[in-house]
Length: 253
Image (cartoon, rainbow, N blue to C red; front, side):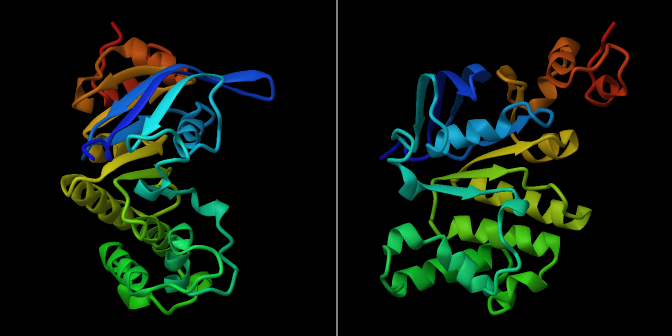
């Protein structure tokens, strides 16, 4: 299928607890795109990812990922959650965590087959964690833990990879390594969508940036074309004299 790497979100609204947290969200992506959803904390970026996964149901609009409705295209979707969502004190090896990413492929109460072990081996190599495969995850650094979660997602051999704040809490060398990895995956044909509130990383990594604050305020390829100060002021709630506007090259005059 030619649309396995595609994403199409049309006129989506999401309500949580009776409150509207997203409205009029329109996002599309094609095979090999590297898209950053950039916005402040609480802007709804993670909720957008969760609609793609089928965890959150839209009150309005349609979502298609890998050519299917949320939940139906799961074989083609990899997901990297924020690190704090994983129980790092659980006594399990790096390889065990990565193999857990294939649970739905393997089936409950079934043993991994040769292909599952190959998928895990390849994912560990791609994420640069092969040498630590037998180490307990509780012994890992923050950057290594992030790589484990990425490897777990890659073990599914996804056409679409969703990453929630992948640069949070990792040092600069690790950020650089992750940037290189994401670009390599994109160039190999994987579609990546990552959420971030880090302006520098969004600009350095993505070939497209969507400014998000409860809706998509702007969408640009390349991201350096986001020069309208009103876009940044609306997204981050800043004034026209904010230093952020000078950093992004937007003229508020």
